[in-house]
Image 1 (cartoon, rainbow, N blue to C red):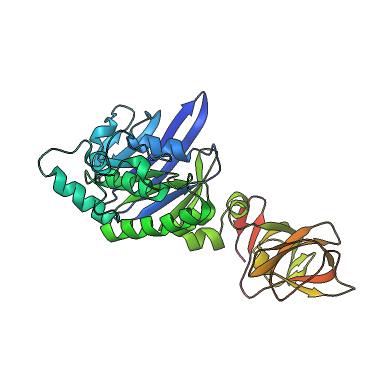
Image 2 (cartoon, rainbow, N blue to C red; image 1 turned 180 degrees about the vertical axis):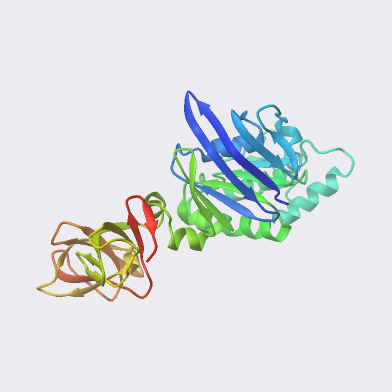
Length: 346
């Protein structure tokens, strides 16, 4: 049985914000809700938590209906722990008092000590929040959310206030903690790298709907819509025409044969590692920009027809801006092809 079940969730604030969202979260699974600002992901989390009331649909937590249009169980009775973007720990309470807040007195000290040990802060119970680093404050918020033994943990952009290095460290630590504790979680983020790292499953949201849900590998490599392909992975879209031999494109023939009539206009999703470059004075493109990222260069290439593609090249390959190149597809694996907004087989 799923730990969290959401069916056809609806919520409007003058305009629809969540429009028919459905998903299940299995015991011990981390589901990442990913999408741009305003896509409805945080409102979906707030509906699960009980901070917002459903306009329509159904939410079950651990087999109990907590919201269905007629029912609205208050947040404190949903057995859902919450970790907010700004931590929301009480500045006037000690670390131990924060973690133990709301727990029954009997056994509280033991539970607080257990949770501080679990999140790697043993012996810091007497400290005040202002004496802690940002990463330590985040661990306190996590310990407090887990202390009442919730059925599901809800995390709303929990690392967005941390600097880049600490954010990466906290992702790793928090994921390890959740997995070690067998915690079921729903994790909201706008950061694709974070979603792909944290989630056992990723649901990509757009305009209040889930465009695609699946494993991180499936979402990244086999996007079903142009939006998903565009949102993940610095994707370029290359025009093409279906032929019996493959797809004719500005980068040459792509030897894939989608099940489409010859002459059908298509678009190919190409990421920087899908495009090969060779310096060639008579080539089909010209380097118009380059970005050094340490281990590699990302080259921007403008093709003869005006199409712009990007290519990932080793740091040992140095091409100056203005260099003429031959750009071709690296067809070591099949690329995703779209007819209109929807992916087609090939």
